[in-house]
Length: 253
Image (cartoon, rainbow, N blue to C red; front, side):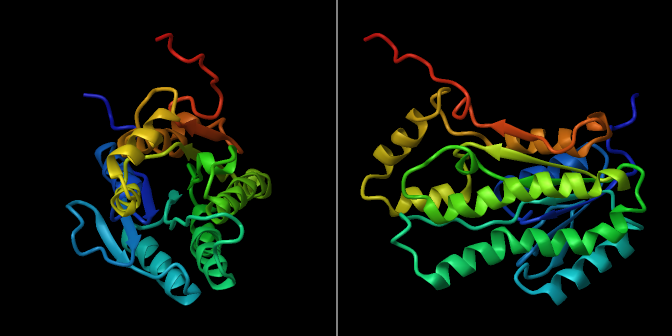
């Protein structure tokens, strides 16, 4: 029997209690890693995932959580910066407080987790950081000004971090999911006047004609986090059903 590809590695997934983060945490564990999940509420995590409660907007909370995780796991090899929140509207629609709130989680949360993890990652022979970015960073989407700005920052941060930590042996990459079938999208659809029509519109704008599954994004994250991707750093991997790069002709009626 072959050895699981992540056997012996230790991973921390932020925002890992639901959606893409939960799918990622489960997959990393299935591939042999010891996995801890950092989230506001980790009471419902399945074994063998370990939960650590922390608020990414509180630097002291994040530092303590990462230190405790590294101590429990005996080190840290992989950090998945997945936690994030959504926002709707044009540049006029969100007030300053909402801009600060979204950036505090989506950008500074990534910063806080990364700088807390770096001292531990520097001691790893297979150190990797994977950030969950978005199609919103590379394509203009309507009613997503604030969210797009925050994910554009994540994309730029990924490149800058990859350059900064290259010589330390720490790879930094990101995944850019298209519209994914997650609890956040469910809440968005439920709030729409016509949920079925809104879902159909979201599906139609992706060339594959369907939403991206959380497990598909998790598979991309697991690849970028693994030693199999040892020569991959500073990359953004689109998992979007062709939304960014393809321009298919409409089907003939």
